Amino acid sequence: MQVYLGRVETKFGTVHYAVTEQGAVAITVPGQAQAEAFGILERRGFKAADCLPDTQGLHNVKKELEEYFSGTRREFSFPLDMQGTEFELRVWQALRDIPYGERRSYSDIARAVGVPKGARAVGGANSRNPLPLVIPCHRVCAQGGGLGGFAGGLECKRFLLELEQRSLAGECSR
Image (tube, rainbow, N blue to C red; front, side, top):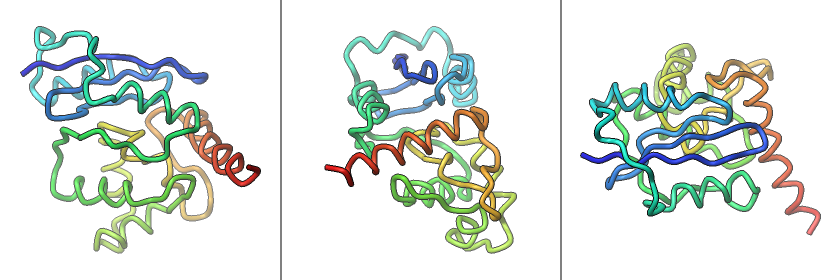
């Protein structure tokens, strides 16, 4: 199966993505190395020989990512080509249900997926999230209001949260 690779330049760094005919397979957060996307692809069984440049803009992934970073897109409409455990898929769906610009705690997500004492397990599922902008794990913070962890680092998490807040604030001032 072919995998198409692309990238989007943002103010915080480059976002790399990989997409198949079925949908997006991997997206890095700004500033993460392309190797992060390749790691996800390797775990899915893809080889370097399967990879080609995304010259066609398959599923509009690049366009929608650019719109997100410009503050004009709040939800992604392209299909996803994901694999995970049953628990991970439930957590990732709960993350997708967090409205743009809002935050939830790890405990909130654990309760939402029916594992009230599973906050650490939610954190583990977040760390294995192959599509961290589309499955917005940056919106999950520590119970006491702290940022918690993030694969792209806390500066990147803060950048993404502030991007969404600025977009919402801009809407209110119109």
